Image (cartoon, rainbow over all chains, first blue to last red; front, side, top):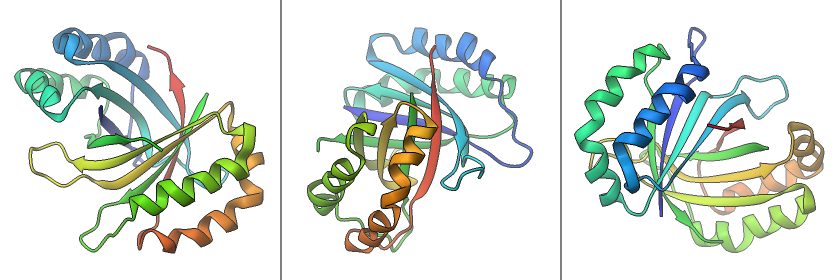
Length: 104
Length: 104
């Protein structure tokens, strides 16, 4: 199982419309990726390490796929449409992290 | 539910011993945090957005707690011990992100 984490940095001037993201962007991504997408978790940043410190990321989405290939094959045809929607909910550009789950 | 994501940056000279991390560090964290820790997922970075690009983070651990307070109360007494173990498995310092799960 792999995780594609889409992380929106929390700069001083960053904005993020979580309502739009959850009601429009994520449903569109789900619909386009179909059964290749095994699940999605959305998170809202609330803090950094020290109490009261800002979160490094304003918002994160973790998308789960069976393999790197399953992600690439399903994602590539829609990437332009996904990217074109970004300005509708944020003025930041996400950092993308692809990871493999390690069993401990 | 909140997630505490501990993310180890992937610089050119970064090292990370995943075996030590999974066999010693995470079991110690589990034991010290006890029932406040609701679960842990460990991930190994494999790529960035573009095929062949490096992952922004070498390794990530996501720790789940019922609330920010439950995290702070259980974590604070052990933070020095956790930090003292870091040089045993990596030469980087982690970025900490605390997030709230948003239901979509």
